[in-house]
Amino acid sequence: MLLYDQVMAATAAIRRVTQQRPLVAIVLGSGLGDLAHEIEQATIIPYVDIPHFARATVSGHAGQLLLGMLEGVPVVAMQGRFHFYEGYSLEVLTLPVRVTRMLGASILLVSNAAGGVNPAYHPGDFMLIRDHISMPGLAGANPLVGPNDERFGPRFPALAHAYDAALRSLARTVADAHPELRLHEGVYTMVAGPSFETSAELRYLRLIGTDAVGMSTVPEVIVARHMGMRVLGISLITNSATGEETAEVTHTEVLEVADAARPKFATLVRGIVKALQ
Image (tube, rainbow, N blue to C red; front, side, top):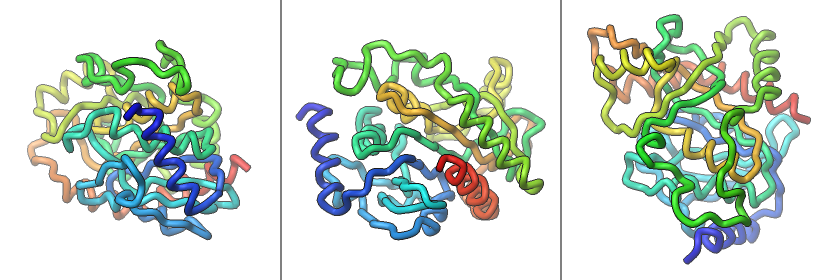
């Protein structure tokens, strides 16, 4: 079955449940899924009920799609994402982004939990993604590898300005109104995972310009841009990752920091979405 046919089958299944046309698609990263509870008039569809959707297997990822209203704006939210390290192909893990575009979303707001490679970043801070480095992508793991379907987008999409400058400016304006939000702006590097990086790897990542490191986001962004969506990326810094740490990071620690940051994350995202009206 062609990818296009899979996307359209998933889209049709969702439209049989709700006819809502979202403006914004939101991908909720590790531990940040509770924002979904703030979506009003929500139609909730488990991934298992959507054809060709994979299954979220990682703690902190609920595995359901929500369509409803947030700050008066129609949204579709992924409460849980898929990861390359779970064994899914990049085509499979990015299929939901293509579906949200077919449902009508023209903006992708993608979030993640990330390690702070920049020594100025501290757990609980946020970072607007200005640009990214894809370590898997540089090694050939790109979701656009294979035949290109022009119904989705061009063969060679440009990514020099993948993260929308106007949306980043809007996010900074929202953060400026909330002193409790520490919002940086920097470069996100994706690594494949699932092991956390060695100290030497972290020092290397800093050397090449990394500010925050994580195991997701970039494939979704590439596919969103392939389909002409505007993109805003937000990283929650859950741990220090400068390469000089003496203690080992754990996924439990990541989720604990994400849990503590939930109110601030909700404030930031709600403010951004409200300004899009």
